[in-house]
View (cartoon, rainbow, N blue to C red):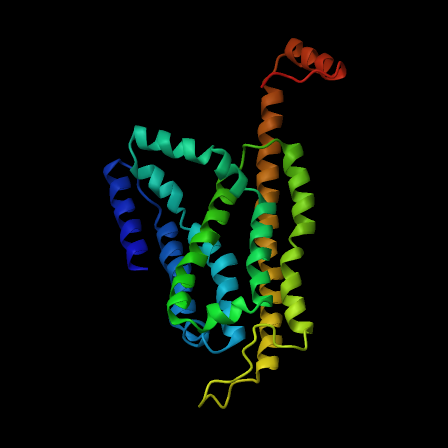
Length: 275
C-alpha cells in the first residue's frame, strides 16, 4: 500500500511538471476506494481470520480479485502513468496497450474464465494448504490483486479496438459465461463433505462455525460476490459497444455520397472494405 501510494503521488507530480493538472476526484477515488478497500480487507476481519475461517478466506480472495481492482482503476493509474511519461515513454506504453497479450486480457470472457479457474481451487484440498500457510496467505493478498488488475485494466482501456459486431458477440457470450464463476460457490454451498480436508476448529475459537457450516457460508458469500461483480463487467461492455458504435457512425457520416455508394456496392459484392 505504501509503495502504491508513493508511486501514485510521484505520478501526480510528474504530470504537474508536464503541465497536466490531475483531477482531485481521481486521487480521492484511488486512495479512498482503491487503497482504502484493500486496507479494510487485508488489515481488517477478513485478513486477520482468513487462515482459520473458510468463509473469510474465500470472501477475501473473491473481493481482491473482482472488486478491489475495479475500485483501484477508478483512479485511472494507467492514464496517470501516461500523463507523466515523455513522448518516447507514451509510444512504448501505447505499443503495450495495443499488443496481442493486452487485447487478450481485455476480453471479458478471459476475465470470467480466469475467475472461475481461481474459484475452482476452493473445491480442492489445495484451498486448505493455501489458507493455513501464513507465508502463502500474505503472498496471495498481493498476487490476487495483481491478477485482478491485469484483467480489469485492459478491459477498461480497450474501448475502440474491436468492431461493434465483435463487441456485440463478446457481450452475448460474456453474459452467458459470467454465470460460470458462480458455479464454484453453488457447489461449496450444496456439498455436504468438507472439500479442503481440514475438519478441525482452531482451539479457543468457540464462536466459529463448525467446518461444514463454515464451508456453506463460504459458498454463500462466493456465490453472492460472483453474481454482483458480473454487473460492472456487463456495464463496461455496454459502454465499449456504445462508444464503438458512435465512432463507426461518425466515420460513415464523414463519407461523401460517391464514397458511400462505392462502399455499399462493395458490400453487396461481398468485398471486405479497406480499413
